[in-house]
Image (tube, rainbow, N blue to C red; front, side, top):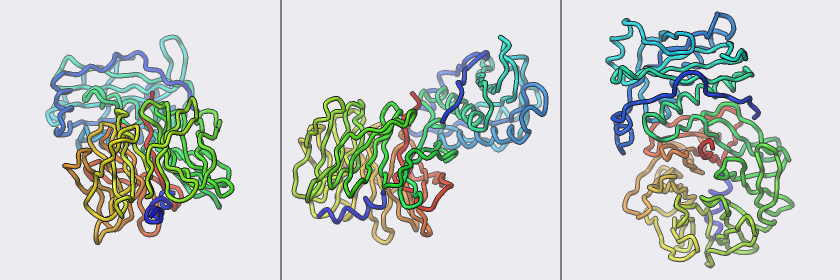
Length: 453
């Protein structure tokens, strides 16, 4: 029965200088704002992204860069699902040396329309100890707490587009954290598979699709990447000499090692939440089962043993359970079992094809690929107790390989539309769909990174 699972499986088939926070005091916001943002269903916080001005004199940074930073910040805050960016005019805030200062009376009418305002400045300047480099100052003002006027300074000895974008992302994440108590996703990464000549290689890009970087370059098939919990490495399936092996690659050094020796099938590997083991589907002959390997001993432990195919294990965030795909009921469906392979129970019953489960970081949902009559392959989600279920994606497409953002609010997935497979993101409720990939026509198997350590 493994042949019923293969079509979906096959389709699935930076160096920067240090940035420091300096000078300007840390952001502090009122407790009522934090409580508002942590409710399960809350109205988005209106924010005015005012504009960015030069640090010292004109000409050090091209004028369009200031507009670009403002645009990046607006996009980050909108994607966060925490803020609603207000449609207000672009205007510059004011600074006094290294301090944010009160805004002019002309801004008062706009303050009444938003909960928080933010502005900044960008350019080449010197620090208090005389070191010159790229300076990114950002301020925030909450008119509901008139004594709160604060911000951050980010500094780098180098100047390039990637660093400027990173500084904007950091400020967006700072605002998200201060109003919700949760980390923002603007500095996360997405790994994916892309076609390169006759092979399939691994790539990593920013969460918004910027700056895709090729990770592997051996001309073979490298598929199904998954991040380590510490974000330092990827594990993936590598095809060599008609065999499949599971590899780990350190991103900083490029060092690779074989974690699971070649076999006829070694796929859908994933780290346990504590990072001490990996779980995967394997078979020497016939149907696949779920295995676990401790990284210190490298001794495999078989978790399932069934005459049908078991694939795509996904850990619950507490490490107590695993969701997986099995066709033991005649058609591919989602099952749940304890971490040691016991207490197997079927989760999905609607539809004749449900596969590729991914457990949310908060543990409240399991997203998966569902086949909808008249629509084809889409993304659905179900609660771990099976009581709630909903369809996430719709439309004329083939949607596959869902992966959660570490905040549990967003998903990344691949989608075939008009003959091309590209990478998209969407909220877990099905809103804000956005194509983020920009290179190649055959991109697949996206995997969203954990938060920055």
